[in-house]
Image 1 (cartoon, one colour):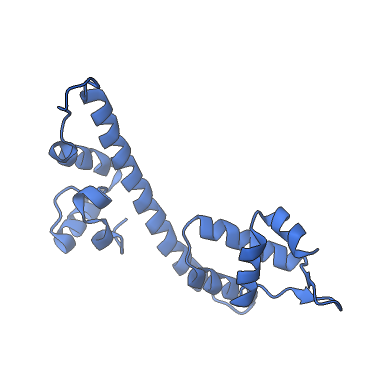
Image 2 (tube, one colour):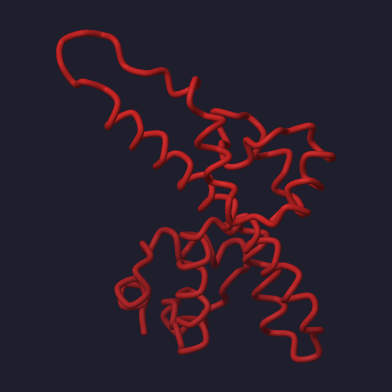
Length: 172
């Protein structure tokens, strides 16, 4: 399969596929005229790369995961550790999005939507919404987080509360 067909099948632009080849993430074979030939293994890797990058995995994370995938003597604990880290980051992003949705929902409900400039200040209501978003977190996790960060009930508020980057590691 040529690069155009591989791009169509994987949903990646040909330029991205060439880049992935250039940095060593995929190594298609070359036929006698020098054109790339993509087999099933390369298509599988490209599909994986497309999904992983869309989910926020870095190039180096993808490289590590592909190396672990190809290494038949790998320890499953290595794969689990990397996946757990990314799962924690995804869960933090979900919590951030839920909190932002709650804030915007409150703003939509409380703002008259007329020509007057007076709408409620989202900052004024953030602690209520932040605490509401924390209901799914166990008390001992919240207390441990508060001891580590001196944060008091504002975890999901990445941008508005300014604490998300400090607590992503090991909290959820």
